[in-house]
Length: 238
Length: 161
Image (cartoon, rainbow over the protein chains, first blue to last red):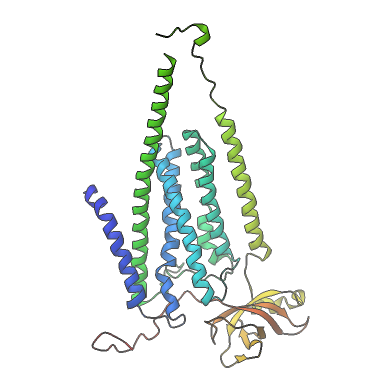
């Protein structure tokens, strides 16, 4: 069952994304106010969802589990690292798609409001996590320090989420996860956007799986290289 | 077999001080991070966490605002938009029913229209005037998305044009 789901992950991801793009570009109607600019609704919020909650969330949860002695394992450290790498990509895509949407709608590419600033800061945190990993050679020390860092910086995620509620921002408020439970997206636009959420979430898990496999191979190669180097040293000694 | 005399005895190699080197590098990363975050936050904080003042707030603080550059938010009143040589003139309304007349430089954004919330960067023309001179107009679109023509009849081939 697990193997079947693993084999199907790629094709199902491709299908969901293809459906999102087809519906978003050709089937759904233009918006009453934004016209065809609304089609970025099917891309920007799903990418932001993956950036903030799915990928950064995965890295944080894996970090917590790593720090807990009962569940500590190198696999969790790898998952956290791979998820954070993907998070960097999705945070950058969030800011780029947001800018592309902001220019014709707001009239500016960028605004230093609370939502955009805190999202940019999250991107800096994610890059700093990767830099911190490169700064530490010892695997156990690297894993521990980066796990603590991921958990501490995760405080920024709820700040980003509630920034449009706590402060007055140029960025709009929530369209789906509203405080009253009201949905502000209607008809085919809503379920196309939700298919987009599913598609990009599956894309994250597909990327995570592939990146994780690569990381396992890399670690194996490093360990093998180390063993060969030690064996060579011993041979030189006799 | 090689002679393992004292001159050729294998001596343990001192491991490098990786922990202290790692700590120094980690601190450097954290230091750079703190600087970058402070720079980013200063951009947001300097221009205030609250990105704009509403019409009602600005008018209640009128005396202290003077001709300071602010971002003023309000809804564009229907029937008040006039295109000028240098931009547009229009009236914006706050939720409390107060009005401010805006004369803005530059082309308004694509979505600029009546009944839409806008954020205008500029200042009141004098310490006592309620007229606002704007240098930039931004549209603050809502979080609601509704189809442009929800009741349009579809043709047999599925098109709705």
